[in-house]
Length: 48
Image (cartoon, rainbow, N blue to C red):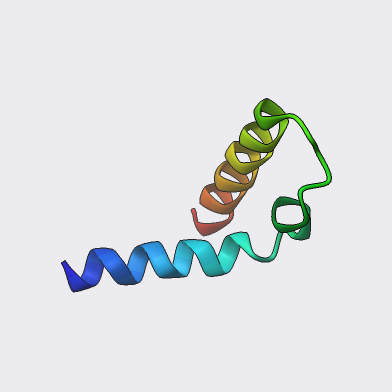
């Protein structure tokens, strides 16, 4: 369980690098969700 928690915490730390997510430039929920998905995909591709 501790390993899984660490993975989630590292994921949020990496997502903080995308300032656009935290500052909520988009007002529509669907756009925020789409950008989070985009950030997750690019992060996954970067890790290999």
